[in-house]
Image (cartoon, rainbow, N blue to C red; front, top):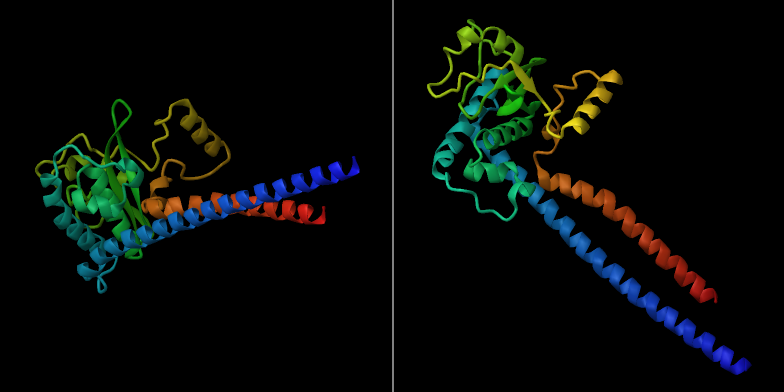
Length: 277
């Protein structure tokens, strides 16, 4: 009876070691695949920024500053993208869709109009060392009708519309913000390019579409306002997520590394218990 019990315990112990060994193999295989995926995201993130950085390089703006620098870069982006915008007019066939809608991809096609122009120009400005963010223009009845870029020049946020290569200015040629542009729209509308839509009067320019997800997004906005956070309507999430490859890489590392760490720790502890037994 005792011998049978010892034999059963030995068989159970061997089976436990086999199961543990197989689980460890699965864990290391998945971890290897995870590292490969992260490497691909890292390479793509660097490649995406490298392409946009080339736009900054060919623009030769090292000697320019402020509004002159921003106008030069916007003109370069417009010159690169405007022909593509007219050429790639067929429905997009892309398995990645919006999941990988990065500035380099937008630079290639310019297919989605203002959104692509803004993504490229905003990222160009960021990589040129300037603060820039995508903004949304609201038109009645409370829908996003246009997208443009705000650039911080000499401590002031000014509006620039890369789709039309247009930046509103005052009579002296100084750049204007959204509120100033709306206030003086009767005069500025005469400056706009030929095909500029007059409904784009800059009355409501916001960083985040707080009505996009209905009551949920409005509740978040209300909470931020009650917490006393300034500039809620000017905050632009897209300012920080233009390079989606980098965003996915950060998310993957933030979630994946702790999970794999816990899994390996669990395997290590089970192995120690098995060895002690």
